Image 1: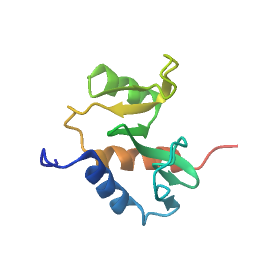
Image 2: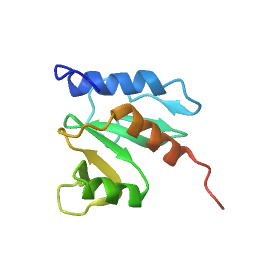
Image 3: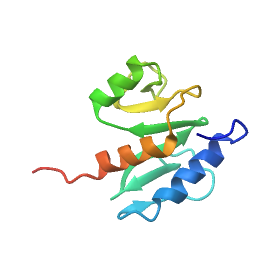
Image 4: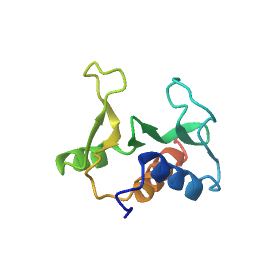
Length: 117
């Protein structure tokens, strides 16, 4: 749990610092950028967590996102702002009491798991 004075940027920086040394993880690109995912943490080149408009956005299994949306902890990600929601991406509600690091770690494991061929 973070004190209320912790900014979203500071909270995300804590997540980055905690996960950047994990195998295959790369930090967000330095400096400001409007490119999608430039603020994202990646595992094996795939984005799993990012800060968008001061909100944590994580990639999780669709059923997990469904459960979190149903429990009003967040909403589905709408990057184009046109109603086309990304089913495996959760935008964490600012009022949510869920821990950012826990969710980002869950997302890292989900995205970084080996794919079946």
